[in-house]
Every structure is written in C-alpha cells, then in structure tokens.
Length: 414
Image (cartoon, rainbow, N blue to C red; front, top):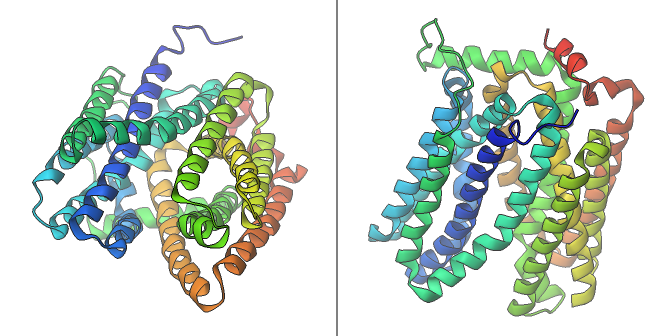
C-alpha cells in the first residue's frame, strides 16, 4: 500500500527543514573561505578550516552521544539551528582570525550534536517503510544544495557584500528551525531523571556502544568499513584543486565548471533514485553506488583532459547518492534509536581520527613522491577495498541485515 499525501506531510516538512539548512551550509562555506582569505591572504589559514571540524569532533564525540540519547532529539536539532544562525551572524563582528576560528570551533560543536541527533530524529519520525525513499529524497536535496548553495552565496556576495551575505545566510537556519518547530515530539516524556553528564556516565555509555558493536559485529564492521572506504574519497577531494590544475593542467574556470557538472550529476542520480527507490533493494543501492562511484574516482585519477575528468566526475556524482541513501537506510534499520546517538557519535569520532590521519599522510606522500602517483594509488586501493566491501554486502549469510520487511526488522530489536 502506497503512503498517502497526508502520511508524507511530516517527512516532507522535515525534508524541507534539513534541505534549507543544507543550502545554508554551502552558502556559509563559500562566504567563510572568502572572508578568511581576504583577512589573511594565506592559503594555510584557509586550509586550517578543513582541520577545525575533525579536531572538534575528536574533542566532543566522546560525550555528545551521552547527552543526545537521554534528551529530545527534536529540541537538540532545533537548538543547533538557532545557535548556527546566531554564530554565523556574529562572524562579521570578529576583528581578527582568532575570533573567527573561535566561532568556527563553536559551529563545529553545534554540528557535532546535529549529526547524531538529526539521524535519530529522522529514524523516529519517518516510518520504516518510508525511510528508503526519504533518504533518496534527502540525497536529492543535499545534491541540490551542493549546486544552489554556492550559486546563492556567490550571487549574494556580488549583489551585496560578504557581511550581508553572512547575515542573510543566518536566516536559512532560522527558517529551518521554524519548519522543525512545526513537527511533533517523537519521544514520550521520560519519567526517570536524566543522568548527569559526568565522566563515569560517559564511560558507562561508551561501554554500551562497545557492547552494541560486539553484539552487532556485522553492522558495526560494515559501517566502519564504509567510513574507511569513504576516507579514500575524502583524501582525494582534499587535493582535488591542486591535482586538476597542476597534474591535469586545467584552469580555475575549468575546475569550477567541473564542480557544477558533478553537482548536476548528483541531482540527476538523486532524482532517478527518488522515483525508483522502492524498486531498488538496499543491497543494490550500496553495491551499485559504491562500485560506480569508485569507478568515477579511478577515471578521475588517471585522467588526461577536461573530457575524461568530466566523465569521472559525472559518474561519481551520479552514483554517490545511491551509496549514501543505501547506507543511511541500512544504518537506521539496524541501530536501535535508544543508543543511536551514542553509536553515531563514536562512529563520528572514528571517522574524524581517520580524516586527520589521511590529510597528513596524503600531504606527506604528495611531497615525498608525487601527487599523480599518490592519487592514482589511492584510487586503486579504494577500488580493491570497494570490491571486498561489496562481496561482504552481497554475502547471502548476512541477508537478514538488509531485510526490508517491517516485522522482521522489529524482531531484531525485540
């Protein structure tokens, strides 16, 4: 039985809230890079923006899950929207780089709460049979934000200035918060007193996560494996500008055009997936998305012209949304909401540690050998890892973890 329009109303409002916040993130990304470069003229200062978020995650992910799982996920997401609006509006008043970095640190803390809380709230609000399509539509809005956000940011900067752009950018998060306020609370008021956020409580909750990982080994290994595979993608993305200009020999204009083309590919892939989501299994979403996205990176790594890079970028952009929607649905269907905040936070911590390691390692290798050889090697290793990962996904022995029948999924949490 297909969901009615009325049944889709709440997920649609949630999708709108998250989508508008996503656009705000990209507008902010453009603006903050420009303002830091204008203030310092330093490429190192701009590169520092990449490091703040992983470092903040390492400092906060140990305890954010403990805070989230005992409190209203809707309220936490709402507060992060309001805080992000307020902090972005304050950036123009910062007199120096230290002040801007301090705000970026606070913004990263807000996002450290937003990620696990929003994942859990989506899982609680969106009925199980609608999750696959919702995640597909969310991939569509994220891909759209990837194109629209920078375009809006660039247009606002041209029509006004960088400071007015940041103030207008803050309004995106206020609108997202307003939409979220229209949605219902998904959790009954807890009768028990919420535990204090103390070191013993955090340590106890960390043990809960370890117990989950030990009990659901396959789920944990597959999600961590996904994060590791995506680290190769992240590492190549960090060096993307340099690789395209210095190794392939394209211009900045070519690079900007390639990013737009990638975004268009993502939107097309997400739109197609949103239409046919219920006809594609979670397994096929993950395997097709991962292998084709990896193929796109391999083409990119061994490209020699604008045309060849374009082919690689279109493929990876188109199929990346399949992978993300499949993994999100797999995760939501296999992690109990009672511990999802803590589990998501710890996985986020693991991801941040890998990110910092990869950033440093790739930078060192690019200087020590060559960037071309480094990117080529990463693409080949990513392909091998993706093949092994796909074999693990398709193994019939683990089919129960990709089950889409509501009653069978509920049995796993009984």
